[in-house]
Length: 343
Image 1 (cartoon, rainbow, N blue to C red):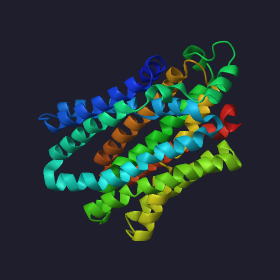
Image 2: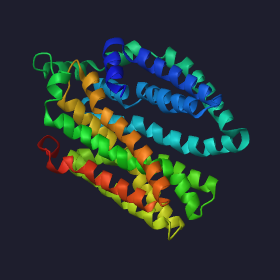
Image 3: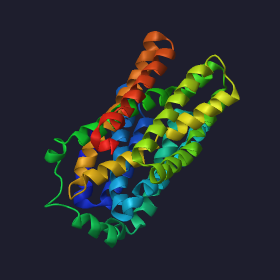
Image 4: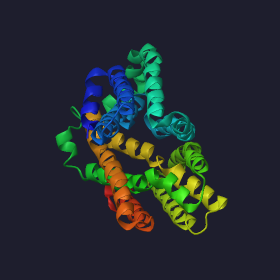
């Protein structure tokens, strides 16, 4: 929900302010959570403050900043940058499990909070004025292509493409995040040791790199719509493999799930972001794109909460997996029927 405000702050104050506030908030949140004695304190720190902190350093400011530099190559540039998420997943999932085993969950949060504050030092030393200026060629071309002052939030929300992208972000996030927080617990229940389960899911970070770069490369070869639909097909195949693991807990099915589902978790992000930035470019792009990305945030929240609730109510993962599958299909539909996304 904070994404439009963060987009507006980026438009007004630039990247240094936005990224610094994000890291400060994350560091404080992790340290506060480590001393929590009541559930509401943990929810406020990890649920609320970390969510806002992630938005400060996440997809909205990253996409706007990259859009000032790479023009037609934006999807590939975003894929390369977002692949860092994959490296983080690969390292931090098993590292988290090891820290929890040795220091407890409080000690793990204290380590992450301290590391976040250390990262502030190189962040503040970067040449943000140069970064914020963008490529003169890309910025000039974008300015020349605008009519008047470009899009406003009021005019954007009246366009069907705004709500189509919002729906795609929303339902896709529901499907992905209904499953993602449950994967390690699901694998343990299926018979895999906890560290092996965490490490296997951590390798989704490796395949995420190839998934993002692969789908972005396809975008240049076969077009935006076929590339996005291909990514959804792989996600669906991965969900089916996850469903089969409860009866056939073997290495090959686990590998297939990690490759198909894990590689596609964020693969559509660069293409969807590039589509939104191409359609709604202008001086208020940060506000507009931030508003569209509310769909992703709401979907992540609804998916994570619903996935846990469905499992608690049914004591089974099968309804959860069916729920996620339906949501992913709904996220794909706008690219099948909405004219602005079909072409």
